[in-house]
Length: 188
Image (cartoon, rainbow, N blue to C red; front, side, top):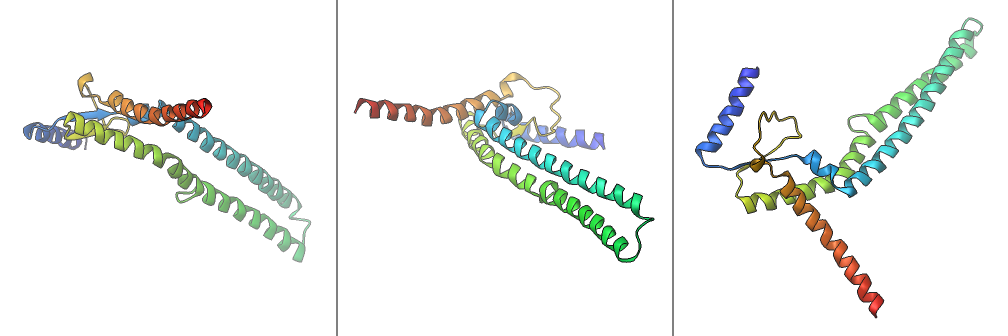
């Protein structure tokens, strides 16, 4: 399997060299770590996830306590009381499972919130990459933060800083415009 993977990567690079394509590499995780807006959004998401985890712990403790009490009193309960208590425990268990699925499942709120928070930043990075690709006439751009095995990378093929520069210049323009607007308003 590794030999096949190596052969595919080698064939990919050989074909790009044969057709004269320039290859560039970008580290999107590094770029995201340098964006203050992303850090802020990530902090909001993490605090939301933390509150859900706390809520889940409370629900789980309530379920565990109720189940333990039921198991201890099970022998003493008869008929309708036994069924009623068993139903309460099952409902709590169902509530915990539903909470986990709703908040943390594959189609849960955490996934949708993560997409909602990260999508604007991914779009910004993609647009900056397109600018760098056009400016440097690149044919292929790889993201080394997405589990691509880059065994060696000459610095001249790493375009991470150029993409970051495009992003920072773009984000600085609105701030500069805001500052200019404030000084214009003050002068009036």
